[in-house]
Image 1 (tube, rainbow, N blue to C red):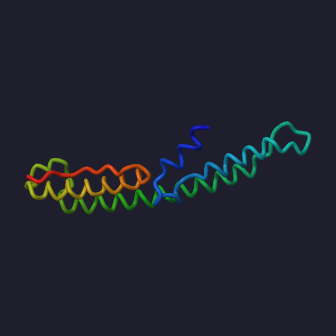
Image 2 (cartoon, rainbow, N blue to C red; image 1 turned 180 degrees about the horizontal axis):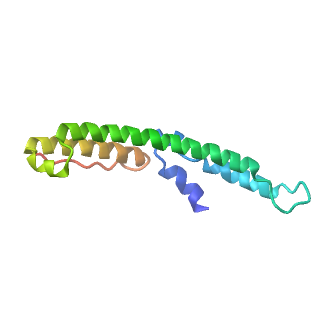
Image 3 (cartoon, helix red, strand yellow; image 1 turned 90 degrees about the vertical axis):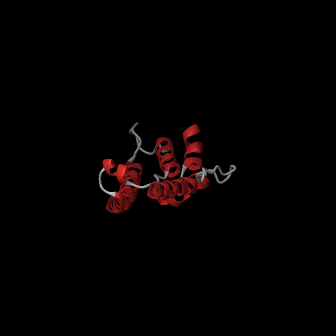
Length: 128
């Protein structure tokens, strides 16, 4: 299946602990489907659902941690540059340049990690 092959290639390595373990869950479903012990035609999926619950708790925990991190960063940016989008009009050119440079550096890091096997694509900010 394409999804199972594409998922690992599109994962961010530093977030590896925050993903559902698709391969293990798929294997549990296959094992339950092929296990025909007993006379019932319904497979026993208790192990799958238990593992799925643990995986979902892991994803939820990871999401909440990232949400808290980004909320903290947003608050810091709000404290530094003002809480309203309209306050952006009061920034001078140097502050805008610093903010854009910081954002582009983060974008470059994310792109470099995502395309490690491929040639790294970088976005450069031209100096005025």
